[in-house]
Length: 286
Figure 1 (cartoon, rainbow, N blue to C red):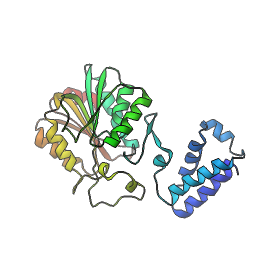
Figure 2 (cartoon, rainbow, N blue to C red; figure 1 turned 180 degrees about the vertical axis):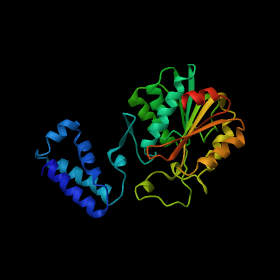
Figure 3 (cartoon, one colour; figure 1 turned 135 degrees about the vertical axis):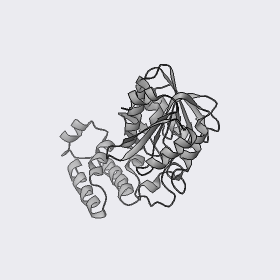
Figure 4 (cartoon, rainbow, N blue to C red; figure 1 turned 45 degrees about the horizontal axis):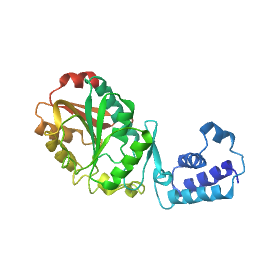
C-alpha cells in the first residue's frame, strides 16, 4: 500500500461517515513525520505494514470514536509552535491566536518590564506564546487543574521559556498585582449542545454555567485586587456574549475603556478593557 492509496481509502470512508476528508491527508502526513515537500514526493512509495496499521488505528479513533485529531496526534500547532495536548486540556483554537496577537501589540505600547498572568492557562498556549515572542515580560500561568499545569509545564520546557506556574481556582492562590491579565474561561452555556468531538474535551474547560458567563462574573469581580489601574485585561468569549460581558465589566469598572474585536469569521470574539488607560486602548487596539 502507498500513501496515495491510503489517503484515497480513508477520504472515501470519511465522506461516507460524514467526517471531514481534509483531516486524512494531514493526519497521515503528521504520522509519517515527513516534511511537507518530502511527503508529496513520496505519495507512491510502498509503506511498511506497521505504519499502515498505525494509520488505520488513528483513523478508526477519528471516524468511529470521534476523538479529536489533536488528541490522537498528541499535539497542536499554535502560533507556529508545537503544543502538547491531551484530554486534560482544551485544544488551542485558531481564533485564540488572534487574541494573543492583539495582546502582543498592546504590550508594545507598555513600558517594560510588564507582568502578565495567563489565568486558566490549560495547555499554556497563551502565556507561553507571549513569553516566547515578547521580550521584557514576566509570565505566570495559573490553572485550577494540576493535570493541566503538568501539560503547560511540559510545553514550557519544550519551548525553553522561563515562566511561573501556580495552581489556583481563579485568583484564590494569586498574591501579586499584574499589568496584564489574559483569560479564556469556559463560556458555553450548560444546556448548549456540542459536537461529538468537542465533547471529548474536559467539561471544566468548556461550560460556563447557565448563561455561559458565570466565570466572567467571578474573574472580573475578583480582578480588582490583582489588576493594575493602568493595566489591561483580555478575554475570549462567545460570539453572542459581547453586550452582557460589557455590562459585567462596567458593573465593576464603571470608567473602563472597552474594545471588542472580531475573529476570523467576523464574529465578536475577544474583549479588552483597561480600568484607567484610555491611551493604551486607543493605540494598541485601534
